[in-house]
Length: 162
Image (cartoon, rainbow, N blue to C red; front, side):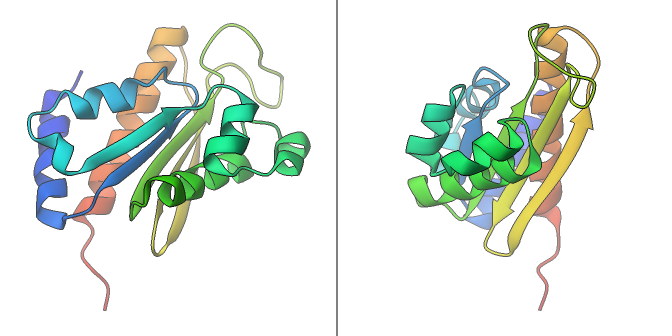
């Protein structure tokens, strides 16, 4: 666990005045656990959902069923919809969503175990990255959390564009 990054994020969120919405599908809620463990984070962490099932993605995050059927839960369109749905559901200006294949079950040649999509959405749009992590379930989850938190840090340190 990288407490330095966590503390830096807490300070950046307090300075920015933004709140964060989360939708986690392959991390077991680890990002939410990390941010809620930081002293004073309640000012910027508004809520989150662990969205393992497609039903949760559709009901709580407004991910369209045809999209899930067409692309599968581990895909760029679905993680983008999850991030945008989390913003809408929680009324936040910033959201982070992750979906991936973190464990030994599942995986294909196109999307092997360790394939993760991470989306960061705000009022200016949605950035999606596709990652391929190595390791067991715990290692993939930890790498996903670290990448997501680094994306947040990068977003919060970007200078405002005029």
